[in-house]
Amino acid sequence: MMRQFTREVKRGNRSGNERSFVALWQVGKLLKRADDFLLSGLGSLMATVPDLQVETALLQKIHGTFPEPLRKRYEELVAQRRDETLTDKDHAELLRLTAKVEKLQASRLEAMAELARLRHTSLSKLREELERSGWRQWLTN
Image (cartoon, rainbow, N blue to C red; front, side):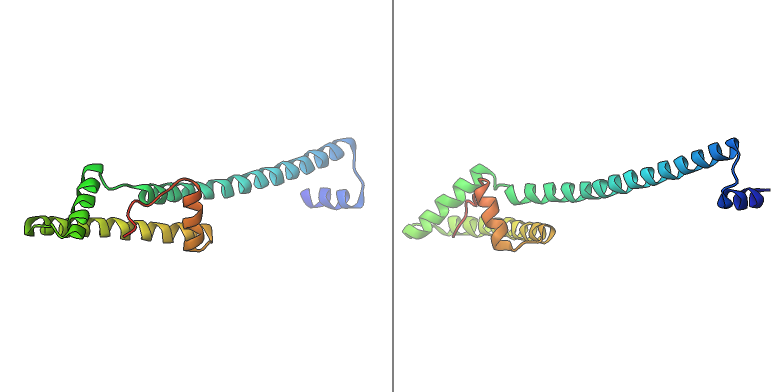
């Protein structure tokens, strides 16, 4: 029966009920297309959410700071080394703090490299962008 109806619809032999059915069927197809379109757009939007979460985590790692008391102590020890007044005990502390600072800097650099990759840019351009946004790296030596 459905085949016969389909043949008649293709030939244009439609009764009032058949025309209503065809119209509803076409509306259904349009609604399905609209639904697919909206879902695909939502899917691409939702696909960016993990990227935003990753980017946020990377920025937090990049902007992470060395605790203020340790940073001050590190700077004091560097100044003592420069003045050649560093004791053996202070030298050992400076080496320990230097290892922590280097670990933090390496972690920051890894995060910056990953963020640059996500943004499809170079590391130097990312650093310029971060500096324009107010980020300053407190260690330059």
